[in-house]
Amino acid sequence: MVRHVVLFRFNAETPEAKKQSLREGLSELGAALPEIRRYRFGDDLGISDGNFDFAVVADFDNASDFKVYAAHPRHQQLITELVRPILAE
Image (cartoon, rainbow, N blue to C red):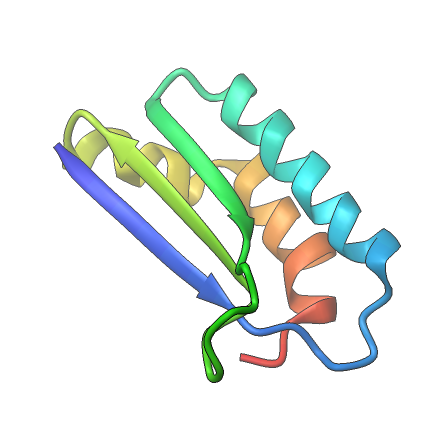
């Protein structure tokens, strides 16, 4: 199994609607790519200072499945259109 973990810190001025669009896009991506064994994502609870705002955890059966996901046009489009515009780090 391969586990892919990504943490986001959003720009301070990011509106909730943009964050919701990201959640919806991730949900659609998780359902669309059969290479993904398990796909979880969500907001930090905000109970500890210094944490990132959002996390994505994706599990794959093997490295080949991860590579398909990573290079997939829908994944790349999601990064370009929904992640990068609101990403601080």
